[in-house]
Image (cartoon, rainbow, N blue to C red; front, side, top):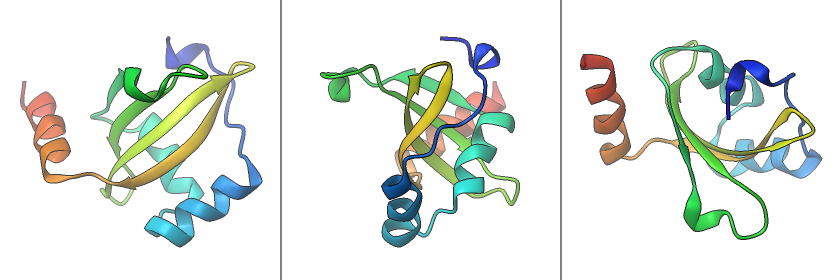
Length: 99
């Protein structure tokens, strides 16, 4: 999967609200992590039983460190969930940016 080949975002009505209510993550913040550096994209094998899911670790324009779970539908990124990174995830992203 190459992010540059994708054509934008496809937002499900419920997920737009869920991320804000549950984790105080705004939609723009979710989108920011796809454009900012550093970022780390991984296939999410554990949660890919129905469709392929991916995780991205990245930062928002305001330097908030997020984990965003997403899938690809019709060449668009569909956000499933987003939350602040755990300590382990922050270390993983920090290590990437220090290499």
